[in-house]
Amino acid sequence: MTGRPSEERPLRRAVCPGSFDPITLGHLDIVARAAQLYDVVHIAVMVNKSKQGLFTVDERIALIEESLSDHGNIKVESFHGLLVDYCRQRDIPAIVKGLRAVSDFDYELQMAQMNNGLTGVETLFMPTNPAYSFLSSSLVKEVAAWGGDVSHLVPEPVLRELRRKLARP
Ligand code: PNS
Image 1 (cartoon, rainbow, N blue to C red):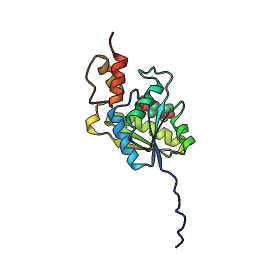
Image 2: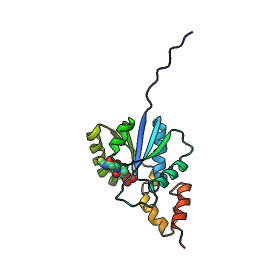
Image 3: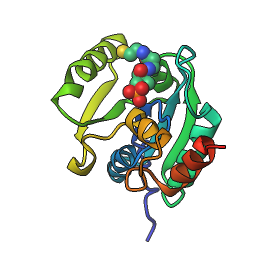
């Protein structure tokens, strides 16, 4: 029996963009859930030259890769420019964003509508796991800088590097 060559469908792609300075368990939860819905999930570490981070962009990428090493369909890279251009250059039709609370909604809606108006790219909002609804990279850095325990909020590689960077003499 001669089989017909299987019809190849294009890979379904989405992007989770952010600063990821550093990645938290809240981010990881969203990315892992997106990776169950899409063939390939891109994590775009967006470069913002006017914002001085604790971690360099290369360090952020290395930490994300180490934290997600058991996922085979996640690709991490940095991008300097508009998110819509990142999507257009890679044929990515969907942006996945976590929504922690109503307070996130106004700005996220504005960005989603702007991005859709620019190129037609869609934004899909995913409710954050309630265990992480208060969590942000900024708060993690602040608590860690004052010696607070953030071990339940970040993946192990991030905890290790936070301790190294913020170690007091
Ligand atoms: O983790 P953050 O800092 O909340 O992420 C915000 C981010 C990086 C996703 C957003 O600022 C962004 O998309 N920046 C890229 C530049 C851009 O496209 N700006 C226009 C947004 S409508």
